[in-house]
Image (cartoon, rainbow, N blue to C red; front, side):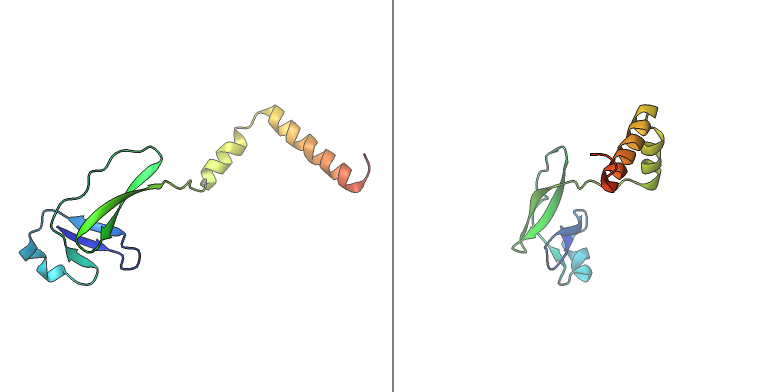
Length: 108
């Protein structure tokens, strides 16, 4: 199979199991190589992505990396703010007033 990978990390970007070795010869270079063998079996692990790495330029290994939590979009932030209950909004306002009064020394 033809495998393209990052030269530094050895992380696989893409692979092609259908192209023959003869057809792939024109594509081969420092980061695109031919490997005899198959892609390792991958098992589903919740919260993880399966990531392939080139190992010793002859085989591929699989590692499982945690899926990073993404930053909420602006729409998600707006929805979260709008969907707060009246009690939550009142309590946040009261907490801000109390914090300011404490900071100014008006209450102990």
